[in-house]
Length: 467
Image (cartoon, rainbow, N blue to C red; front, side, top):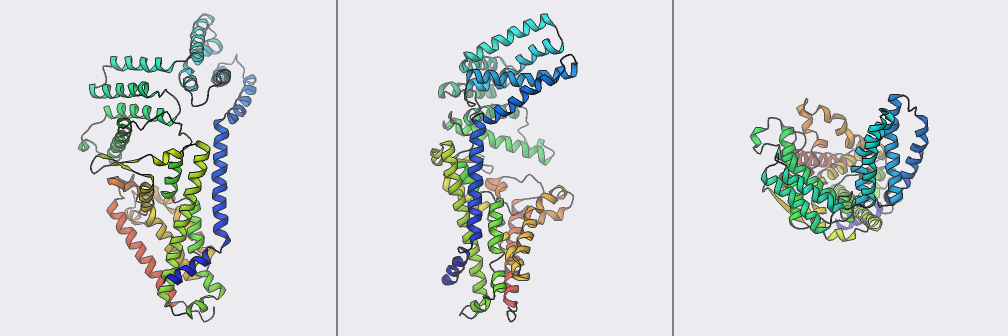
C-alpha cells in the first residue's frame, strides 16, 4: 500500500497544474497585500478626493436640493484637507477624531451657510467648527476618555454592573495607552462597550425568546462579550494595528476555509486521478501489478487527501509570511486563540497550531466529500472536466437553495448544508434552525460511506479491455 501511495503522489506532483494553482494563489495574496498597503497609505484617498473636489463646482448652491448635496461632498473634501494639513496616520487618534467627531460641526456650519443661508446662525456654527478644528490640531485623546467617564457615571439608565464594566474599559484605555483609533485594540474595546449596552436591554432568560433568531442573537452577544472580557481581564488588548489582518489570522483562516483555490485543487487532483489512467491506457499496467483494485482505489484516495493537506499547509505558510511581512505581525503567532464554549459558558484558549488543526477538522467532511464526489464522476465517465464542473456545481449549490431550506425540510439533509462543522464548535448553533450538529455528523458519515462504496464498486467493475 505504501508503494502505491508513493507512486500516486509521484504522479500528482509531476502535474504542472498544481504548481500553477499555487503560484496564482501566492500572486493574488501578494497583490491584495500591495493594494491594501497602497490604500492605507492614502493613495486611493487622494484619487477619490481629487475627483470629489472637481465635482464641487458642478452643484448649483442656489438650488436647495443641490446645495444639500454640495454640503455633504464639501464635508468629506474639507475633512480630508484637514487630515492632509495635520498629516496624521490613518490609525492615529487625530484621524479618528476628524472622521468620527467633526462631521456634525461641518454639517451644521455648511447647512447654515449654503442651505439655510442664515448668516447669523452660520457665524455661530462656523465658530464651533473653528474650535473643533483647533481641537484637532492640539488633540488630546485622554480628554475624550475622561469626558466619557464622567458621562457614564452620570448615566442613570445603565445598571450598576454595566456602568462599572464600561468604566473599567475606559480606565483600561488610560492605563494601557489605547486611544480611540481604527486600530484593532481600540475597536475591540468599543465593540465590548457596544455589546454591554446591547446586552443590558436583553432578557437573560432563554425561555423569554420565542424565535430561534432572537435566541441565537443573544448567544452571539454573550460569546463576543465573554471573549472580549477575557482579553481585557488578561490584558491581551493592546494598541496594535491589526486592521489589515495578522500573520496568525491568515494562517488559521486558510486551515478553516474551503477557498476557491482549495476547491480547484481538490477537483483537479481527485477528478483526474482515475480518468487519466483510463484515458491514457496506463490502467492496464497498474492492474498487472500484484495489487487488487480495492488497494489501488484506496491508494488514490489517500494520495488525493495527502495532496490536499499539503496544498493547505503550503498556502497557509505563504499567507502567513506575506501578511507578516506587510503588517509586521509575526509576533501574533504566539498569541492565544480564543473560542467561547457554550456548554461550559467559559472561554477556551488554544495555541495557533491547535486552533488551526481544529479549524481544519471542522471543514474535513467537505474536503472528503468533494474528493470522493470527484473520484466517483471520474470513475464513472472518465472525464476530468465534467468532474471539475460538477464539483463546482455541488460546492456552490448551497447558495442557490439556502433560501428554501426552512420551507423544504428535506433540503436540511443535503450534504452541502452539513459538511461545514465550524458553527457547532464548542456547542455553537447553526444560523439555520433546521441544521444541527447531530444531523450534520450523520449526513456527513453516510455521504462519505456512500460515495466511497459507490466509487469503489464502479472502479472495480470498470471494463479496461478497450482502454
